[in-house]
Length: 332
Image (cartoon, rainbow, N blue to C red; front, top):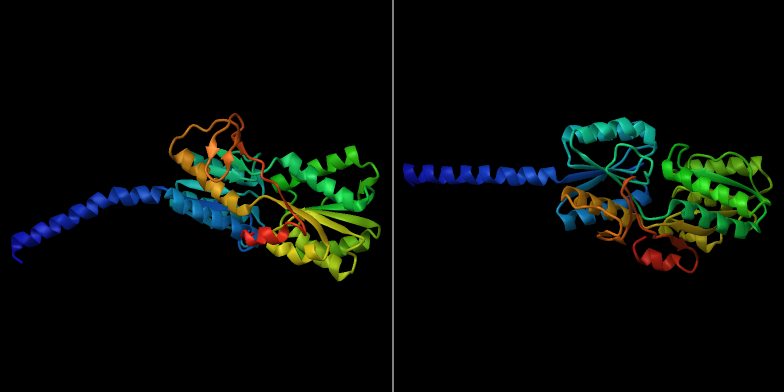
């Protein structure tokens, strides 16, 4: 190869590299990372499946991260790292909306879009996406608990943390529904945290059983709550006396459901939730107008509250002996 041919080849290579730079930059600019409450639990593993599936379909480099423990400060640190990385979109399932508000506003100031799930009160976001009606979600679970308690007696409520937004909204709705409709039922004490960690819910339940010998029901908002509570109730052979109801994954709760310990579980599909967050991010990145009745890929037609930046569909699922096997076959 002579000098002229060599220089021509080098020039072509350089040109290809230079023209590729904008494409690489564009691909890097289409990165979305979803920060969840805690890494490694089945619920968020399922959510991650949806995040990655949507990322592949929409051409977004989408991934998920989460703290090693249920700690809002760890969420803040992860978000700070993503701001420094200059991702295009940050997704968040918040633990404490007040703690994460300042860092999300810094993200927005840096031009990063913010999509939340389970964060209707989270400031510093572009849109919040929900697959359930929050009040209804609390009410239907209390309705089931009341049925299994014979509409009377003492019960307790677990949430992930005392600052987890939707868990406490659901709990408020459930308790209000009980007071209005089941006057012979009584909340034995203030709600307990720990429903995002199986061991915490298990230990709390052992303590609650000792402290409240007349207890007839446990209502858990947090996917590990019914598992921990159910394990404790089964260990103490109190499955016929104490009803456990709450949010739970079918694959995790099957044995407890089959044994009649968990009387019924309620949830939406976490895989759909992860998919929806990325789908909405795609709409935002493409500059699409989001208005009431919009068709969100993977969700269908959604109710949109533009003023409050809320996108909502109603996809409550009931997990019981009749439905659990089919839901597990479906990937849950």
